[in-house]
Amino acid sequence: MFERLRTKIRERLIEAISDRVVSRLAESATFTDEVARRVAAEQVVNTSQSEPWESDAVVERLVERMTPGIAQRLVMAPVVFGGEWDRISLGEGVQLVNTLMNVSSGRIVIGDQTFFGHNVSLITGTHPLTEQMSARHDYPREGRDIMIGRGVWIASNAIVAGPCTIGDHAVVAAGAVVTCDEVEAGWLYGGVPARKIRKLI
Image 1 (cartoon, rainbow, N blue to C red):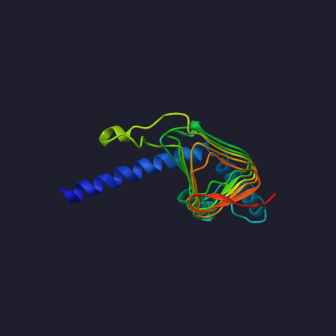
Image 2: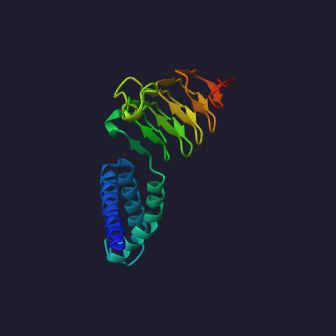
Image 3: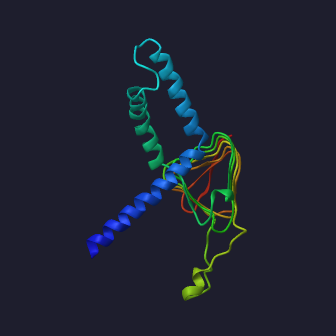
């Protein structure tokens, strides 16, 4: 019984994850652009060869070249918890890596050219400290937004707890825990809890 149950759950998980990945790729402009670039490059190479264009061999060659990079990016994909992507707004050139974005209690807005290290957490969610038992499981649905400006660098393993506004070109050091309402523009913040360290710009 245990083995059958484990196998079935594994199959369902693979199916669910596959469906989600496929739908994300279908909506991804980056993925579509990359496929188009690779196809164009292959067409150029193929003009000097006798191999027919769109043959199985050409398609297989493209698949072999592209799949490892796509798989690597999917492993490092960002995670949204407590809501959907419609509670997140991303500017141009944002690099999320595998950032966890908890939108249970607010929105997350990220400005142009802001980028993240590995394992960063942006957490709007919270729970009532003074409640007990199951009442403590409750959480607000709004009011704890995280607003991140342009050109911000949030380094690996940092945690930002909402509500918080991070100004343009600020840097949050690796491992920092930001619990303040504001990170000033152009400043480096670090530590637990994070504090101002020095002016950068």
